[in-house]
Length: 299
Image (cartoon, rainbow, N blue to C red; front, side, top):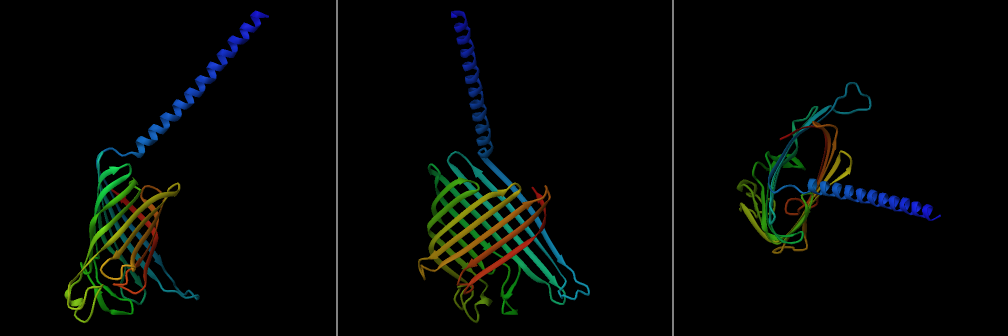
């Protein structure tokens, strides 16, 4: 009986050791996978450059179509370029967005459907944890002439008129390149337009006879990009601004949603929605929507 008990004890010890070895192996494998995943998420220090050119097209054609309809063709070009720097104590994110689109409806003149040039720069010096002392710079303008929605013969803007510039110090909370919020309580804002747009009255908040307007206020800028599902990403960009010098409770809003559904390396389906509230330019919400199949080229 003693020999049987001894053998059973040896078998039990062997099984326990085997189980512990299996558990330790699984824990080691899990830790290894977590480490590899963390390395992939954490980008190395230094400069990183990412560029993407996109062309969206859509077309509608009608011939003897009894239900009615007008033939049309439209195209949108977009350029995104990121130039970012990272070190143990510094982060510097630079983003360029440029878009231009045209549409031609049968029986009507060629018209602009999208027009934007924007440069964002955000510099951060590590403070503690995920907080950074920051300084931001934002530049917005357009490429082509714009016309009054109520009267398409009246030109109200053109290249570099208006120009919107914002800059100021603040604090940034940055979880990752895809999730960050910057708060700048001492923001300067400058609006510039060509003099001929203010000959008869104010334009984009610039007083009659003037070419520029200065404001001082607070800005909050947020960026959040995530995967809705495999090969489908959603990019959210929110900019808020209030002018301390005039109607401080009147907040300017600029929100953009970009959804990209990847087909393969070169083809995507793109949806863009943007809404702006700025009563210096228009007493109400401005909105735009663009959807189409995109041909992409990364560099």
